[in-house]
Length: 96
Image (cartoon, rainbow, N blue to C red; front, side):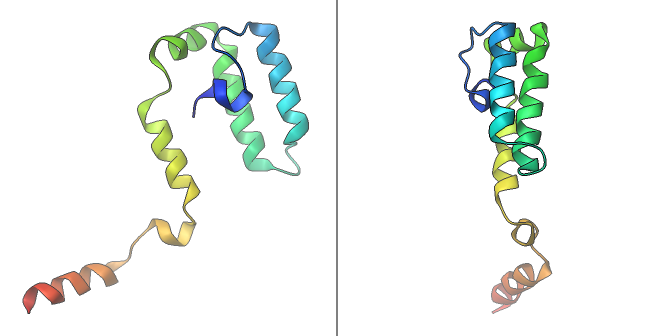
């Protein structure tokens, strides 16, 4: 998750622009209507509130596994975990 893109900000945004973007995003995704959107917006705001963390994001970008976690969250829960069935089929095919 890149907090700058979640809030729709440039990387050179100051504190006031971060706060204004956060409040604008909250109006679009209030916690009672869109809890997942609110969580993403809140996490992005928390990441950009700290000046040292904001500087680290500007210099190094978001953590590499953050994109992977977003991809996993996009899958439905029932498709995330594979039971033993497919593995047993692979083993049966190898015996033949």
